Length: 122
Image: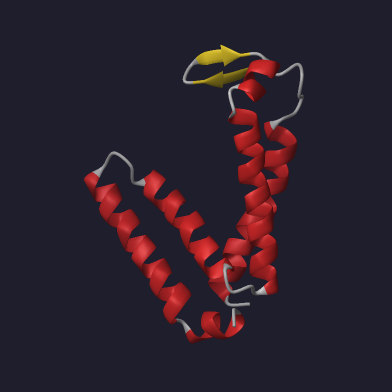
């Protein structure tokens, strides 16, 4: 596995389990806030935040699996996932947007032009 893919795999694999365990624990007795509004346990699930969080965590786990197996679509999955994170970090700032765009371009170049990545995912 190429070194950057190994790093991305490690970050995903290490973070999705704690997000799953501690993001929803203790389940019924927790208080949740969305935009400063306190939600009960059932409101958290009915608002769509709970299912959306589970889908996000599940996609992190599946992307980690696909990266470890070297599936072809994992290149696109990693590019989209990390690009979204980079662009969120740069949101609201011109300098942050330039830096984030540069990181996305570098990640695209590495993902689709690196011979090691192309060989690994073929």
